[in-house]
Every structure is written in structure tokens, then in C-alpha cells.
Amino acid sequence: MIAREALLVKALVAAASVGSAAPLDVKAELARLDSPVLAERDAAEVALANSSDFQLQDLEALARRVDLSPEQRLRLRQVGRQLFKSRALPGLGVQFGGFGTDGVIIQETIPGFPAAGVFQPFDVIRALNGQPVTTQDDLRWLILSQDVDDTLEIEYARNGLIAVVQCRLGKFSDLPNAVRPSDVDMARAFALRWERRVGPSTSGELIIGSDISVDQWAQAAGARAGGARPWPLPRESGSRIVGFGGQPRTSLVSHQAFVEPALLLDETFGSREINSTVADVVERIRTLTRQRALLDERAQTLERHADTAGNPDQRDQFRSMRDGTLREIIEVDVQLEAMREVLRQLRETGR
View 1 (cartoon, rainbow, N blue to C red):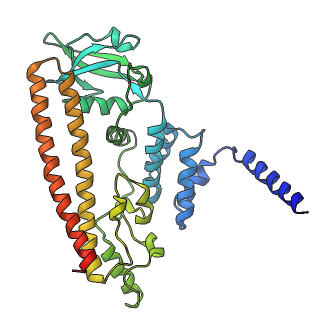
View 2 (cartoon, one colour; view 1 turned 45 degrees about the vertical axis):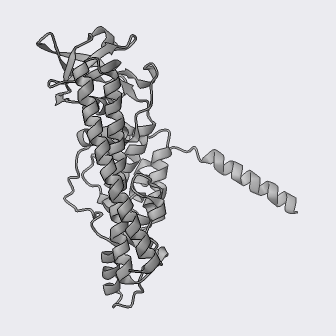
View 3 (cartoon, rainbow, N blue to C red; view 1 turned 180 degrees about the vertical axis):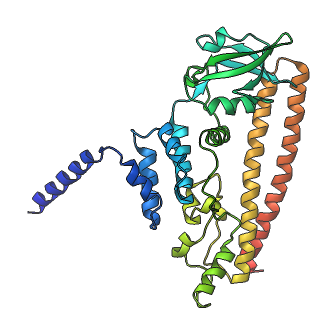
């Protein structure tokens, strides 16, 4: 009898897995994004991000609706970021040769890309779709924000003359020795695309931001409970603690770009006053950690520019900028170590 029941369970699981390929009900999932239940909102976000029949362009059209709540708008943007990273990436098909006062210099073109029939070495790209570019990062982010086969309007200079041409993008994967862009590059490119294709919220509603601390939430919750609410907040109350953009802070533990796991505030540690101080120190450490990551990316980018620059003066300029960034990294490291020592003392002594 037990064996028959086991076979029945297996059959039901198999049937469920076959039925899971049903078309996505976008209207229903959009409504679930604004559910009062956190688990429902999270599930809807996952469903939209993992559906094979829901593309980035579909999401952008949905996100342009003016009747969305702040929660729906924020979660659609998060889904959009995931779809943006998983799609085929575009490539212009040129190798950069540094930048000057007028724009980004082309060192050479890549055969097989439409740009090879348009540009020549030492052409200077000045603007893309009307957006001026002054550094290679500017140009990289603008290109990555597009789609494969998009046609761009590119303003460039050649031998002192300025011209505007239409040029179609190819596939990033067709570039020789293509290395996937960094998370920072992808984030900046997505931000540019979202601002251009979706734009800011037009609802006029404010979204709770990261300036609301754990301390402030606890005070508000305690006031509503007549001052009887215990301190510190129990871990199951985490969904009441709001982080950036209105997201529950407990949902952020998997986002490594915003959290240093070893330094997460232990909500069961110490008194109210001590936890308030620890929270401030932890937040400062998080800020410095994000700052250091960005500086490290900048130093690596400048190092690449110095290695590929054909002009000795440009190469020296890049190296000078890189050295300045490295000095900033050292200063941030000193501050980080000092703040970590403060945190250790707080946790060991309670002062």
C-alpha cells in the first residue's frame, strides 16, 4: 500500500511539472506584485523574471503605466534588471583607443560588424543618439543599454570634420576575446536604459527610503503598541524594517552589492542604546564597502585604458588617474579598518 502511495505521489509531481509550463498571466502577476503578503510579492517577481515568454521590452511597456503603485514600480524595475542581464548583449564592434577633449577615440574596427564599414582608426565618437560621450565608460554604458540590431545615430569627428551616421549594433559575443562586462558596467547601462525607456515614476507617491533606520522603525512600532513592544525587534519582525526603495531589509541579505554579511546587525545583541550605535557603525561600514568596490572598478578600468592607449600622453594621463584612485582606495581601507575596530569593541564591551 505504501509503495502504491509513493507511485501516486511521483505521478502527481510529474503532472505538476508538466503543467508548470502554462503561459504567464501577466495581469495576475502584476496584481500579485502589490499583494499585502510579502511572499506573494516575491513569488510574482520570480515568476515574471523566469518566464520565457516575458521579455524586457514587454516589461518596459508595462512599467510605463501611470497607474502602478510604488511597490509594483520598484519590483518591475528589479525584474527588468534581471532580464536586462540575461539577454544577448549588443556590441558596436570597435576597439577604443582612449579619449580626448572631444570624445572617445577609435583604435580599430572589428571585421564582421557594421561599424567596420563606417568608421576608421582615429575617428573620434562625440555623441550617441544625441547623448554626448566624454569617456570610454560613457560610450560603453550607452552601447550596453541598447539591444542587438538596434540602429544608433552616432556623431563622430574625422580629420577635423564632424559627421553623423546611422550604425547598426552587432552581438557582443562576436567580439574577439570578449569578456562579459562587470556588474558595475551592467548596472550603469541598465540605469540609463530604464531612465530613457521607462522614466521616473509619475504617480506622485513617495517611496520610503534607506534613511529610515532600524531605530526609527522600532520607535514607531513601540508607539503604536503603547510602548509595550520589546527591544530589540525580534527577527520575525524583519519585514517591518525597510531598506532602500521600500524593500524589506530582510530581503536584502542575498544582495551582496548592498550587504556585507559578516557585519549584519545582530538584532538580539545588547540594549537599545548599544544597538543604535552598532546600527550606525554597520551602516557606515556598508557605505565604505560599496565605495571601495566602485573605486576598485575604476582603478581596473583606468589600468585597461593605460594598457590600450596608443598615445604616450594619454597613457600617462590614465596612469596618473589610476594612481589617484589607488590612493583613494588606501584612504577608504584605513577608514574601514577603523570602523571595524569600533564595531568589535562595541560588541565585546557593550560601550
